[in-house]
Length: 165
Image (cartoon, rainbow, N blue to C red):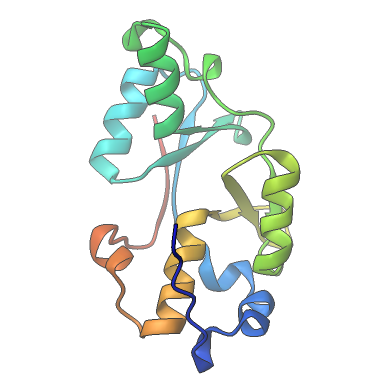
């Protein structure tokens, strides 16, 4: 397998290791009550065009549910989506990090915890976003190629942060 490594002025390993999560995080955060069915959550994810949601109980984050969770667990286990609660599939506990953490440190947290999504908190421990490997790739692409990347075209998003039923 061949890899093309780019080392442009804006995307040096040193510059990327100093980038903060606040620079790369996705602020398109969808928060849903954890007692929702996975059918309802899948419908919301499709409508909002997000690949993951934060699940809350009494306003506190208790888990993350991703498209990958839905595909692997619902289909593989032949679950009935309308009768399966989100708590049966969610990844818990939520791994949360500060917005001032560097990309390098965040990647280490992901590997250490075996997760692909990190919740991002501000200094008051309020969720302000989520970061994934896709966000790392989007940021790196912008630094290497300019502001508009293929990921931006495939996964456009606007700012949001609403709690859904």
